[in-house]
Amino acid sequence: MEPGGDGLKRPGAGGREPGAGGRDGRVISRHPAPGTRHPDSSRRLRVYCAGPMRAGGAFVDRFHEMVRMVEELGADALSELSTTVEWGAGLEGLTAGADGRTMVSRAGPGIGDGYIYGRDMEWIALADALVAEVSGPSLGVGYEISYALHSRRMPVLCLVHEGAGSLSAMIAGNPSPLLRLERYGDSAGMRNAIGRFLKDCTGP
Image (cartoon, rainbow, N blue to C red; front, side, top):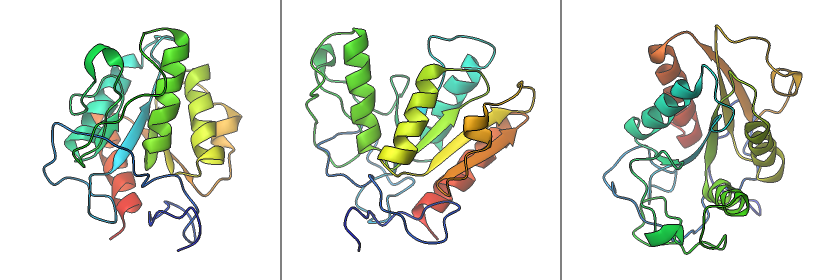
């Protein structure tokens, strides 16, 4: 395997891409039962979930639904909305995954903007893939997508509701083979899009 490779199947790519997934992060999960597995089969797939938290808007509920669907489909959702990921006491410990260990955050304790930035960057570094709800504009989500694609080289799924307005050309026109853009009209459509993406990330 090439340096930096992680064994993940990259959606839309002709071949395997160097990636950031599969890191040996020291992590823990409430649900170590079999689910959507990482290709090495030692743990569940880790998916960073990006969506508009502060921007608000009509699609915030869709983001909450997206996180729940990622978990229901058997992956570990790296998000503060997750119901399967443990949080350390006082938020000092950022935890995710299913290998039975706990990661101590380098972001430090607290709930300021600096802490949130450090926490989310750590989660993206631990993730195997990123799923984002992009129906509403969000500077933070755009930053996270760019970081995941171009710095971490991981597969990204962008979900946009059919009723949303125009999508940024930086997403709609992005030619990266690691980026998949899916439109959905209802909850079933969103779930199907996420399911296809997770299946492609883990291979046959």
